[in-house]
Length: 111
Image 1 (spheres, rainbow, N blue to C red):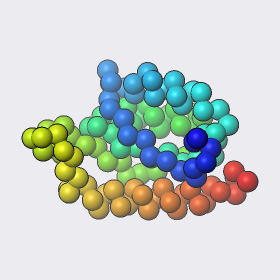
Image 2: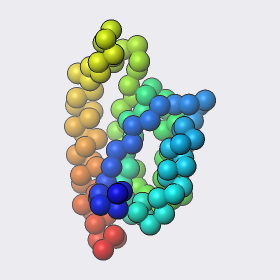
Image 3: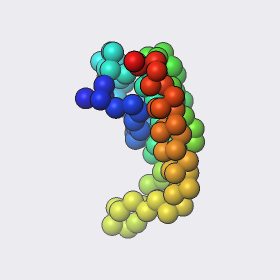
Image 4: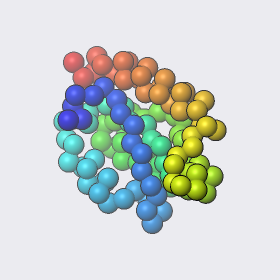
């Protein structure tokens, strides 16, 4: 399924100062589908998991973009658990613009 996309965004929590094992396993098993793709990260307040994902994406032949969007369970979710991204709208727009631009730029590598 990943092979159908030019780029994608990964949203992940930080788990024991890193990425969850299931996400690492998924990246390890993407093989050809992941090559020359773009990945951007929205991290649940976990800069350390972002750092690990950046290294992993480089090793797997993927590109990554900035900015990162770090969501806080204390500041970005309403009392009912609904995500309130108002303060992140500009950063999210920048992130998606970068994903779109780099995805197009990497198209020739995937052809």
